[in-house]
Image (cartoon, rainbow, N blue to C red; front, side, top):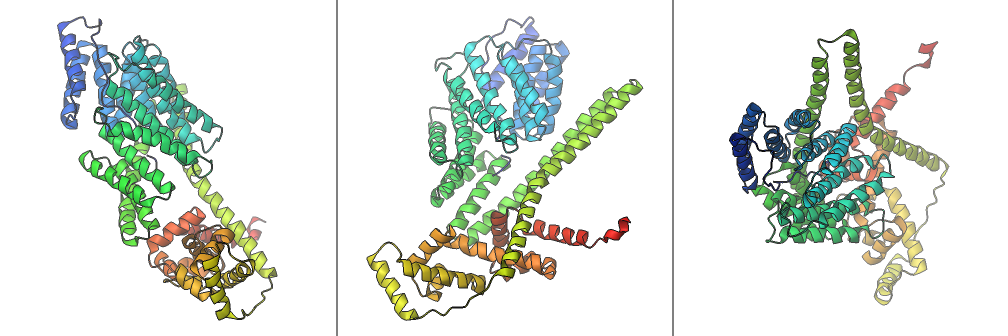
Length: 562
């Protein structure tokens, strides 16, 4: 799941300001006020008007108009994922905001939106710096309700920084949870009768923060007891607000909420509910298009249909997910590269006419930019390499065990009688008799060595028949002694089989993924890749390439260094 936590709000409340000193400035202010209050605006037309008003403000030297129109433009660009434009405009507006008091919240907004975009592009330190500036400016806002609202936005958004860093530093878990709870506490203090913060803004902020908390507990769901229940509590409270027609809230936030509820029910193994909510998100996304929401819906649908064994639909949505995910990743990388180049170029331009010392500083900054790029790339691949090394340790241990193992073949007696006894016992008792359990486990061990799990049409019923027992006993034995359900158990045997083939027989490394999938019992290479990654944490292609690289390195003669 996904790269996908994003928030820019639709509009802000305005009130008259004493800073208007000329009729021309007052006219610009009135136009901006009216524009901000118009719902469902055409984005192209809105951008055109805002650029025009910004240009008029610049001509008059009307800083408040520049900041106000720039704030709204940054919101518009953010909603369209135009990160380059957000940062370019943000840099310009921050220069105008120097030494100004943020009476109305425009400056806090500018720093906060700039920080969000920097965070999405992986520029964590720059992002955190701008978030702190946003909080500093928000605290200078005179109106208390408006101050509470902007501070709530800042604390909620700064969670992005902790969210991206928490897996590097587990201590940041509490910081992330703390920022979300503080955001919720602040926004709930806003009066429902506020003249500067509408009910729509207040309750949208409450619902969105509920969603952030729900997503936090969803991530914790696999390790922390009770987390799924807390996730459901917060997500349902937020969804109730988004479904309440008395609030006019942004549709993209509702789409995001529907996707997170789909994720919740997938984790709770209620796959039909997961499918229903993901489809609701897709239907709403057709009217308010956003590819980042759409790719989430595709992912949840692919996973849920796979779990209910609808392979055709799972494959369909997985193909849509993969294509769109790759497209978005390419766009994000291009924007991140362009931003980094832009930052370096700006430094070079500013120092072009300066002294030799300034040229040295420019070179150092360019070097740092390159180092940051390398560090980000290495960080991304470090986790994959660690998982690969863990696989290699396990494979070597497996080889050592096989070398020492003495295989004893035993013949089962009275097969038909025992099978009948199984069926009779299943009727009379809930627990598996000890002798029956021992016999099933011995036969499972033999089955695991027989490679019969490679058959494509293998089901729990057919395996039970092979082992002369019933499906109930077999399922219980696998669950209690292999800690898996039947499908995961068979997948782990098949993937383990092909991993050992790749490790022990180099010729397998030259085969296509489709051949490897068929070799270990999968009808679809797509399903094979998903299962391989789920079990090992990396793709078969990555595993094969690293095996090849290790083989080449092992063949380099050591006497070359004499």
